[in-house]
Every structure is written in structure tokens, then in C-alpha cells.
Image 1 (cartoon, helix red, strand yellow):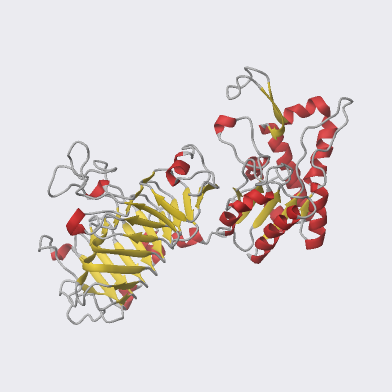
Image 2 (cartoon, rainbow, N blue to C red; image 1 turned 180 degrees about the vertical axis):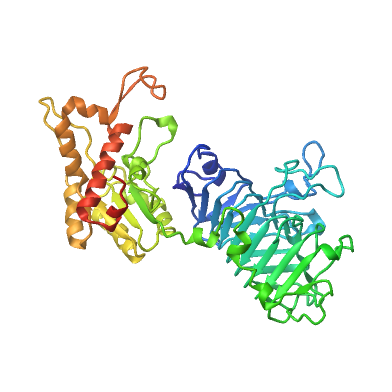
Length: 547
């Protein structure tokens, strides 16, 4: 989990920097949590298996102001597809609680101005806002060719089109002219679609072989546009498909409902349909005669899972409510993940996933240098609270940096340390999750006679007392790791830590002597102790451990 915070309290201050930091070769999902703030940046997302989670759509805003009539230094205009605030061109992306805004202004002044250009397959938006005027939201891919010039321009110009599926749940989308347009098969469930002026809600360019284009289910069409000044849609290409099912349509919707875009398209190839709508704009008595009112049986086919399943059976609602148990890790550098440039340095949380199959997933939010206090102050615990669900686990291990004297991290083992840990335990329980307290893993510390020396002072004992007070499960990793180090002795224990000779490893050409952080072998051994503790506690999680 990566934290972005505009005030500098996270891992990055810009969202794009966080995205760029993600390794292309990773196999697991990466979560970027964005704290409240206004982020003036032009995002370009091409990393798969990414979740981008804002603190709140109302307070976490990505904004930019490019537009179609803007000129490049060469004098060439941006046209529509360079004007985006955010380009999402990767598959398997989930975005929640964010606003994407284009501030360029109205189309008559600046031309098209995209808030988002979405050209990925299996992309999910939930509780997001898209704010603009003309062409607010483009759902790729591009049609085969433009009508009025040789190329579209933009990040996907010239690429062969492919079928993509997108899902928008409880989103707020505002614009005026053709402000939801493109070729994707997309479902909008329980969204608010807001017309800020005269125009058309949709301009679909559905491919001929696609069974569905845009399907709006349970949405509410509102806005400040004049009465009967907004069309439900017009076709951007010949085989456009749009359906409104069980939606509320405001009085701004035209009685005719649909338009033909200056009669350029053949109405026989269009599939503009409605069923079960209500509200002042839902009267179908004066709809254009080439639109369709679905029968009850036909409307049954407009089911989210059926529309978006494709050949791989994708179900975004199932993905959002995936029943897998999540194991969240809150801690410091001894627990955290490291990129390949740090190898063989690894945290024990980085390898814990090796003991769990498809029934559980490890979500490692641990971060180097954090104490129980600074982890909260930087919004890292809030990021976990935004994701954790009933039945999940929160593993809590701090102490190494609580000992540090600086004000941002220091806690007293008898008072403030316990006060902060209570927030983890109480917060997890309030959300139906199970907190597991863990005492600090030991450093490799031996005196000149080879006797082990403890470096954590009163912190482990305080965690034990707190676990007893709160009746919280405890893994005494301090004791377990102490016994492990004693069994190995001062020399053999070096293999568990980051001890490297000069030239031994390319990432550390000058060598390194580190008695706190683990090698890969050490991370595995410490994770093994955690697994042992899970079994000893008799947690339900133990049933998911792979032997």
C-alpha cells in the first residue's frame, strides 16, 4: 500500500509519482491510497492490477485544464484525445472515492475537454465524480477512423480496437454535450448523471459485433439544463447501443428522447432502448419512432453480470465483494515490502503470502521508519480503515521506531505507546476485523561473550499487558525471535540479517552490516514464526495455511 498526501506526510506528494514507482513485473495488486487534497496533475495510468483509493470524492480531487483548442508548441491543436485530466489505459484497475475534473470551461469556448479517458478492460469506478462540460468521460476504444481528419491523436491513436468492459457504481458524472461517449461496453449502476446545459447525455460508438454498449441501471438524470433541452443520446457511429433501465429522468430530458446527429446515421442500425423509467422526463408517448421500449422479458437481459461477463466471466460486483479474507499488516521496516533494488533485504510481511492460498490475501501496509504514532499521523491507518472488512485481520507490530527520540515518532512504552496501539485494536474491532498484537522482532544483538542482549526495553512487556487488558490475541515475536537467535548463535544468526561482503551483491557493492533488517532467508524464518503463532492461537486463519 502506497500513501499519497499533498501535504508531504505520505510516501509521495503526487499521484503520478506513486504510479510510476510501481514495478511492471509485479503479480499482486498494488493499492495507492490518496489523502484528501487537490492534485493538479495530468495522470497517465498504464499499470495493471492497481487500486487507486481516495479518502473522499468530495475532498480528493484530481484536476487539470487541457482542452481541444489548446495548441502544442508546433502549433498543432490538442484535439479531443490529448485533453484528458486522467488517462486510464490499463486493465484490472479499480478506482474509488476520487474526483476527476477538467477546468478548461465550456465547449463553445475551448472545445472538448475530457475529465477522464478510460481505455482499459475490467475497469471499476465506485463513488467517483467526473466533472466537465463537453466530452467529460470518454470510454475507449477509439472508433476505427475519424471523420474529419487523418488521425484522432491522443495516447491510443492508431492502435487496433479491442473489446473493453467498464463498471461505474454510485458515480456522479456532470457535463453538457456528449459528455459520456465512446465504444466500451459499460454499465452505470445507481449513478447520478447531471446535465449542466443543453446537449446530449451519450454519444456511443458501439462496435457492430458488441451485444451491449452503454447500460444505465437505477440511475438518476438531473441537472440545471432548461426544460426539454437534453437528449438521452445520439449516435457517434452507426451501431450505437444505449439503454436506460429503471432510471429517474428529470424534466430537462426531451420528449423525443433521442437524436440522429444530423441524420448521418442509419436508424436501422441503432439500438436506443428504455424500460421502467420514471420521473417527468420518462414519458415515452412522444419518443422517436426508431427508439425501442423493451418488454419485461427483454429487460431481464440487462443484468450487470450478463452484460459484462465476456468470455472470462468477469463480475465487477463479485470482485468488489470478494469473500477472500484479507490480512492487513501495520508495522515498520522489519515487516514492510521492498523493491528489487533492495534485494536481498526483505521484510517478513513480504514473504508471508507464501503460506496462504487463494482463500486469503496479504495486504502489507507496513512502512520503513514508522512508529505506532507516525503510522497514524501519516494517514496509513486511515488507508487500512478505508479497505478493511468484517472477517479480515489486522497484524500490528511496532516498537523499533517508537524508541527513537524525535517528536514525530517517539512514544512512551507505558503511556502514549499503549494509547496509539489501542486505536489499532479498537478500530479493527469496530469494523468487524480481528486485531493481532505482535511484540517487536529482535535485532541481532550479542555482547562480546556471545550472550544475547535485548534492545527493546519495556516495549514488548507493554504490548503483552495491553493484550491481556483488551483480551486481544498476541504473538510474542520478541520471545520467539530471541529463542531463534539464541539457537543460532552470534555468527550463524548473521545469515538472517543483511550482512554482505563488498562485491557479494550488486545492490550493495560496498557491502553492508545490518543487524536490524532481514535477508530473504531471515524474512522467511521470521514469517515462519508468525505462522507458528497463528496456529498456536487457534485462529480461523490457521485453516487457510498451506503446509
